Amino acid sequence: MYIGLIILTLFLILILSKQFKLNNIEFEISESNTSKVDITEPKFAINNDSKNIYITAKEGNFINKDEILLKKNVRFKSDEFSIETEKVIFNRKNQTAQSNTKSIFKSENTKIYSNGFNIHDKGNKIIFYGKSFLVLK
Image (tube, rainbow, N blue to C red; front, side):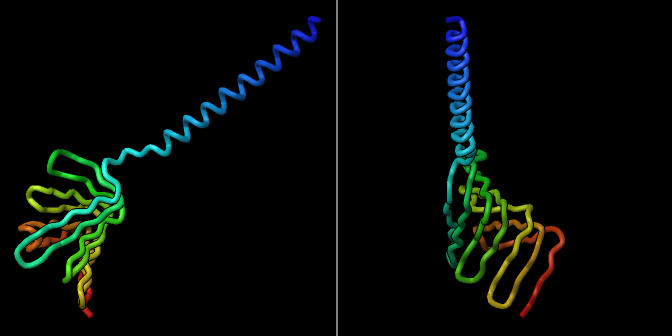
């Protein structure tokens, strides 16, 4: 009778330990699926009198009420050019953007590779930072 009680106790301990391990695995999976992103696939535009520049990204996080950090495959696109980079701080109120990551500017006959850029004056002016080089076709 004691042997049966010992076997039953060991069996219950084994089942309960497996259940706790399964609960921990489910909890870890649910935590890993939750990301720290405020906006998924954000879309914005910089509008001025002559053109619109559309901005897309995979992720975005609010820095404050006006500024948003755009991350992963950030693209600025207008009828005249496009700029691609990985991180940009976009100011919705001032309609400006700044990046300190490697960037590629592309237009019909020109490519500019740089270590960052600053778009201001509602998209009328773009300044490229760091080591930059220009390719003309």
